Length: 400
Image 1: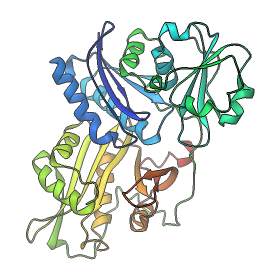
Image 2 (image 1 turned 180 degrees about the horizontal axis):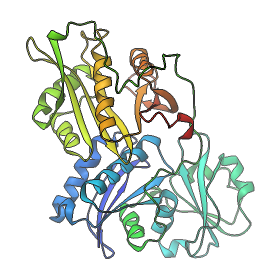
Image 3 (image 1 turned 180 degrees about the vertical axis):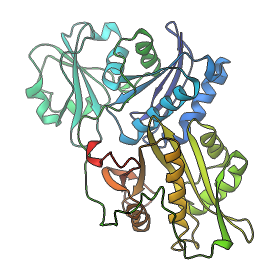
């Protein structure tokens, strides 16, 4: 059985092609964010090295968390999109199980209990205990490092995972405690694939959330009119001067030109945009001038498993505050609605007041916050706000 294992839940973006306990090809990059730009190219690279194509993969396996909110969604959306495109199953594996099963037998020996500590990038850690034979010893918990000492039972304990370093000081006076090497904190996608192959610890490909979002605030008051995805947006620019249209890979260079104008600090190349558009469930929209054909804005979106995501969105400076953004957003949401997405997610910098006004006016509500996510050179880190828009009127934000 040929299985493609994916992990984007933590500080690495990892892919492995696995068959019968043999890793045929693998790739990994350690990076705190930016998984959306590199995951599909890594998958393509791994398949090319193995001489395989997507139709030859029998099963897709992906970590379901706990982990970074956006990273989880990227991996899950990709796995579910590939499963839908190929008609093959997708299975999930918890980060806890993947890390526990990655520990070598000689390291586990001598401990009656193993605790996997997963970094949350917050004050608390995600933890789950396993017996020496890798059976779950209890449900996952969310605890501050100082509270872990009181949670641990007596006896020898092995601490592993990327959150383990934060427990060295609180557990320094506990002689029965051992710590695994720090390189055990990176999830091995080959282990994810193996667990999916055996059915051991396999779950539906849905995110495992152990805590509520950091922030949940109501959106600004707005008219309960028709959903923005279905309502035409009116522009203050004469329509004859620009047009909206669905874009394809043949537009990649012009989309990259628009992206560079919108995001000069971190522009996407035409190759990156081509890879994203060619990915399962991906679509692109472009605003272009009818006077000289110049690209004025873009939106790249992706849909999988009933959920949509806006990967990037922007209007070129000099053409903002003219209604193009509202039309572009409405069109992007309409495309996701036709792809059966019931909810749409995006991230935006907390200091981007203009974008927040646009998104709130378009029906998005804040459901979370990633502290210090954006780290521009020479500038203090900026929080990323996670926004959600329900395309299905029967689904409320509180249900997520």
